[in-house]
Length: 384
Image (cartoon, rainbow, N blue to C red):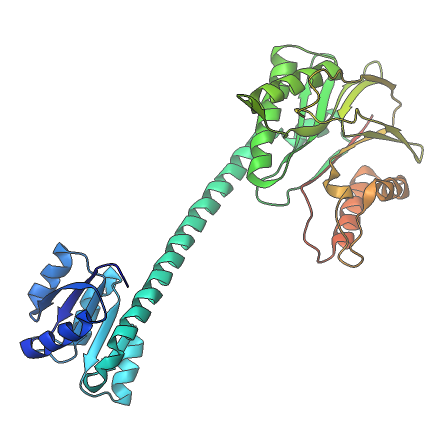
């Protein structure tokens, strides 16, 4: 205890007080104020801050227990000095929550008792501060979740245009780095599934940025080709994430397609995210460009546009890697893309709703008691 310790001493006997302070000064660097009147004690608490209160149990006008009750709201470490102690008094001290007590014939223990109660109070205060900070952060994240969910388009819009559709969306944490996006245009329906770097708060910030850039590219700039939209998304993400001469190697993987129901045609472009079409119990895969949006070394990349003829009944699957990267609670192995293909083929005869339940049940059974590895997002769109 090298720092100056400010003590409020509640003691009516001047001789006892002098002996006590003289003894403590040999061990502790301190300053003190001695009081013995109740009103003066209250005034002292109001006018100054104290690191410790030492109080005699027996006082002319009030007791040490009363002094503790008065000071309790201040949460100041409190040591009670008493001439004797009974089982009843011990019970009362414990019930009141007094930090420590000492018998007058055992004051040699006082310096160590002071160190213990002050350390204990510091830990308690730190714990309380951390608890408050945690609650504030948790409340902020929960509110951010409301904002993020409000940002996502309503699934009803997708179902109104494609009655046979579903979205399996399961963030790992409160906030998600995965997001889905769709926009109904005059002739086509644009839809995207994206996986931003990380999850939680960093992923959520990137997802909101990506969502806004997609909206601006398609709705404001009227860019129609998925490859051109990804080109713009890539340039904008690179620009935003660049700070002076340093570029963050963060970004997103995304599958983007535009569906023309009138002409039964779809355009698709992908950055590290493939597209599956389930047709007559067979799975057709369209591979993405093997590079992420916003990566450091992809400034000159031109994304590939795939033109795909559609048939009624085709089921289009877009997904992030959270599903396939999930570890098993029993074998510690990942689901893998290969196993996802098998799951989709096995459930191809089911209705869209039943297939959704099948996919989710498989995931939950595979995960078992294992912690969720990443954000999960799987979208299915059936062509009417």
